[in-house]
Image 1 (cartoon, rainbow, N blue to C red):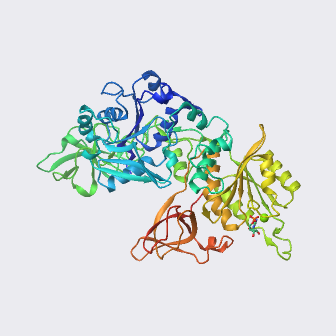
Image 2: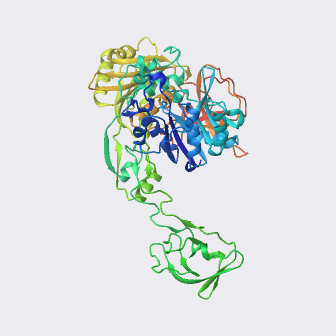
Image 3: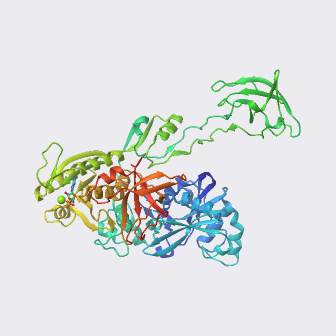
Length: 622
Ligand code: AMP
Ligand code: MG
């Protein structure tokens, strides 16, 4: 996607009628305001930002972006804000989001852009489907700025609906899975309830869901409650560049220099003045000197002169174009090139083209990858601020569990969950505290949970959260904090305990995963992973892709199924997935044989061969 071609517009021009006429965008939220929160989620997705507002213009200007009031008078609604944006945006595309939607998806621009291109449309709009209800979100739209006149005439004719002008343009709908990302905050009460800065009980968080039933909870709803309940750990440390690999950036890294620092050549060839190029006959230029990468030509070439230049060499003064060496004829101390060989400006890299001085090179919340290390090095950055590592304690519960090295008594199994959990936590970059196996007795469990709570930000247990007779885990967990026990509409992994245990000064988020080895991994990836990343200050939703199914799969609608799959490249070059054999929740071999998980969503029924399904690729998964 060409992010450079998109301007982001925050729609904050409303009257805030349902909030008692306060300016919604400027309401406190989290550690700042709603508008700041939305802008920070939008910023990484677009080339530039602007704000549509009609009141408190100075307060909005303080965010550091242009403020564009409506052209149509009288608080004509978001559609007037859209018009203001379309008329002023300097890019071919405009993305709008409302100022009261602090949870907007991190891939909003990317996905709307893809939908727009695919449908060859003028406007792409976000759509969600929840509990069978399809909803269009016209304030979340990406559109071509050249449709401005169509919108203006709609407004001039008295039109006020955000989607009222759709019949006059070509519209593409883009379906987003996570409806909660489009939630907007309408009342002061909602604002307080959802404010991430305010500690809330699990019941308060769950009350935001329609039809919350702990005994029949949808995967998406459980994920939403968890996401809303956990809070980031706010401690930052400064580390040397290399040590930042895999860590979460704690602040935007602003470029202290232009990259490249000077205009330079993209080719081995001859630097020349574009104005010397003749349109209708060959151009002959005298070679006045030579410039290498790292060693500039000191002189100033005159009209009719050029300079031999190597890739990366500094463009000599007055030169704006480079002709590659293979396109010229050398004739003594001159070169000759045919008319039309290059255009003025060709093969020159401009200073600041990669990154302009003062612009954000990397955003806060990013997990640093090898390319980022290189980018930071190219800026001369030696140290970066990162979030402190998350401390996660984990243990297994069950009297039948034996640790490696112990004899395997009758009816016992080796504890494997502690090893998969260890591996998954390591991949996330957590500091792990392995607390071993804890017996199914109340005292041991209580002692283990309290100790974990003392030392860790989060606790992961496995086993004991279903309703088995010898499982005391549930009772103890419930006694030690704010913990709920859910039955989730999924397979494998129906039971899950989630909450926070401990008191005011020491508390830890708790994930009580089921006992079955495959269920542990599925619940970790689909519930704990994102929550732990959020606690680490990172926003990294699971990267679900689509692949063609090689064979039919039986599936009941009404629950989410996670099946183990093997993804290969089919004969026609397309990705194709087939299931590993047995899919029982205790069969860990199915996980090691698989290279991906097939995710069959809640509403989906049987899958026919050749149909597309969601998959999660294991390789590279953090
Ligand atoms: P539970 O949820 O405690 O009833 O456990 C469900 C199943 O998972 C039982 O068959 C347990 O033996 C098995 N299980 C529980 N914890 C582990 C573990 N740490 N390693 C391997 N299997 C386990
Ligand atoms: Mg058990």
